[in-house]
Length: 487
Image 1 (cartoon, rainbow, N blue to C red):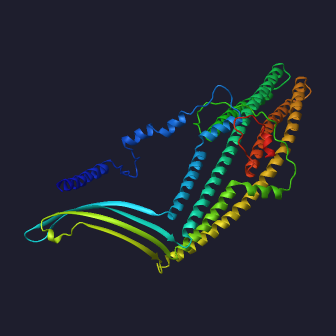
Image 2 (spheres, rainbow, N blue to C red):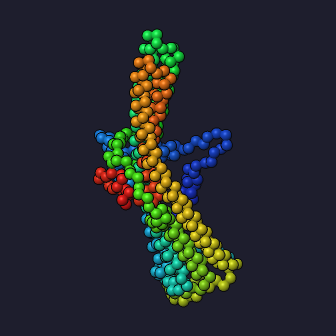
Image 3 (tube, rainbow, N blue to C red):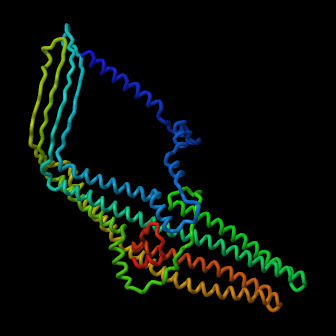
């Protein structure tokens, strides 16, 4: 018994010491609102040794060749944190289904206790005793008026909602990768166009200087041409900045640091063709049946409906069976006549429980669950209406982008011919410098418009495929983007 007393006192002493040590290492709040808080050294070391950031830094990216779109998609699916988070959330929801099923199983609890006590029993003798022993208990809920089944249904619907949310995250990632890829590709084309504009403006500038030096032009023409040349260089610098911004956007979607070195290959397929006119009502109905974000909300509504059943069961009686056994050993010294002997207790029971009155808490919980269910139904209705408007808008944005591309391509052809003619006419002394400068400006604008229109076609096509849940992942195999229209 002396060992048990020594062990108990030692454990208590160590607990006090450990609590004191932990209090010494607890971070403190800022001492003043006017100065920056300084983190302790261990926090600084943790920041320097951030394992998550080191893992991001150590990701391998093929820098030996330009990457095609399917390879970028595969990389994003391996690395993107949003997709991994959605996956882990779905796995957690699956585990929660098992938690909800647990009440169908009996509960077995094993415990042990030990106590030491010293008391002054009378003026002559002290009583000192130690008790210890194990205990096992068995409990099984037999009947709860539908609460368990509703809880399982709620967990299952939450799992379905998490699974659909994972699909939506994947769909969003495919949209983000494609839009970022086409955005970077278009930004690179803008750089090429801006370089062409610099060449054209320099060509005009040189022509104006030659004419002025020969006495056939005026200094104003040279100054205007020089201004146009510098403006083209400014636009080129802005275009190069846009490339870096688009590269950072694509890197984020890929799940790699923004300064990761990689190059992209141009699209291998033709531009998406104009879609055949279909019954937009059928397109919307089919999309709403397939969109994972809408399906996730439907599952969430079903989970709320199950929550109403869970709350209703709390107002009804439940029946449980149980049993327990306990053994206690007692060692005592002093006046042992005041202390009981060793004992063993075994019991079994059948218990009916019914909260007849709990301050209307169960009733109010049921009312709250019903109101939440109705609110989520209204949220689903709003989401479906918004989705129909989203599809409608993106469908006509895509068809408009196709038409605009046709117009801009025709305008670019005309602008190029106009500039060539104006340049030749200016050198021949037929047209004025203002005619040449105007033709150069129109050609510059036409170049950018074509690239912008092509980018709009790509983006509006991807956005429409995303809105109708038609985006797919094709692995690393080559494919043409227009094939998406057949999905």
